[in-house]
Image (cartoon, rainbow, N blue to C red; front, side, top):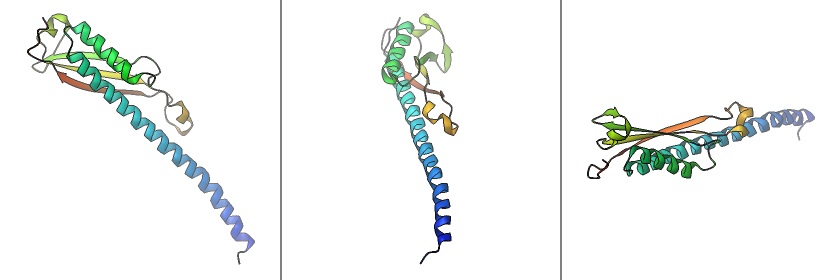
Amino acid sequence: MRSRGDRGSMAVEFVVAVPAFALLLVLVSAGGQWLNLTGDVGSAARDAAREASIALSYQQAEQNAQVAAQADLGRTCTGTPTVDVQMFRNGAQVFGDASFATAQDLEVTVTCQASLSAFGDVGIPASPTFNDKAAAPLDPFVDRG
């Protein structure tokens, strides 16, 4: 038979264990959400690079990349995702529409600020910024000039 002292120590253990377990669940949930957002931005960067690579001009490449990123991220970002398209020829960066005709590769960077305000009480930033890069080759047999 248990004494009254055993019940008291069990109640103290319960009072300590339940909040610790709840905190662990919140941290696991926040980590999952963080990984999900990282994957979403990476996927949007790959889709944006793919769409930009089929464009016939630099302006069209930027527009295609922005549309693809916006379609993928939808309501994920607190605002509009930022898209940066850079072109390369022989490993060196080239600029402008005139250079687009001779560019060999392009790289797209997508940046998204997302809301994790639900996890702010456990020390996670309320609006972290996620970004990712993706590259795609340009078809050398397409006339972009």
